[in-house]
Image 1 (spheres, rainbow, N blue to C red):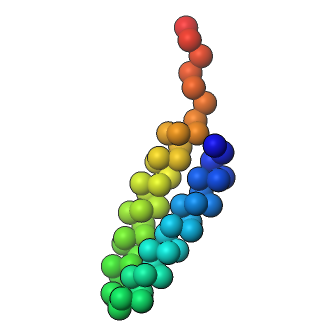
Image 2 (image 1 turned 90 degrees about the vertical axis):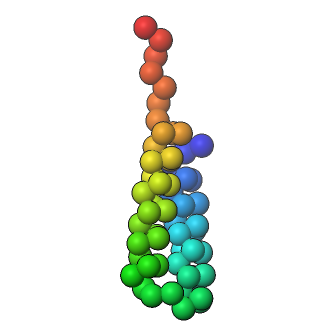
Length: 57
């Protein structure tokens, strides 16, 4: 899978989480903190899964 595809999926996930939290009436600061945490974890996962494998020595 490509990195761009992971990022698109991640952005959709974060948007859904932010929308749900806003609908439940949570404070915007908590929505922002949660979205930043999810984005950070998602970027780390995307980089680790899409990076080129090291050639055997």
